[in-house]
Image (tube, rainbow, N blue to C red; front, side, top):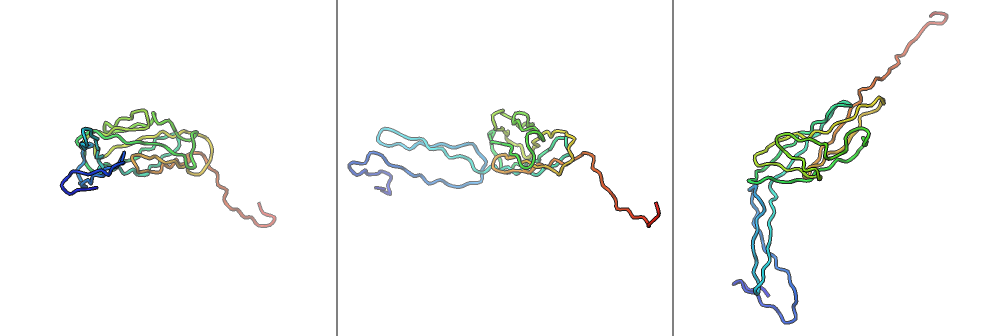
Length: 178
């Protein structure tokens, strides 16, 4: 039973319950915040995670054998380094078309590849580049795509063909002519 003055009364036989604590939304980039909820000589710790730092990943394009540089914009601020997950997903491009090893993805602006599918962004970073290498081949093919996912947003990488293509032009001749 909820009482407005703070204390609660348990009905006999209740062995567990859930306490819900309302939180206040803000726009401050900040580290996780904790609070303690005491009850009957014991306590529980609640953690409020920051939801204000967001990432936007732009699409990238490069010829076979060149690097694809994805521009990433960071919105919001945080006084502490923040960690985000990242991944690569095949589209029409596969492991033979680009380097699918997460540990080989490089980042600018001091962003650290933690070599476990996460990156760490220091406070104050407002943009950075994520670089994925493509593989040169000799196949004549259409553009191939894959996706880079970082922190809940994604960009499409397009690998353009740089191999020789042949085109045949129409021709005509008169009868008996050459």
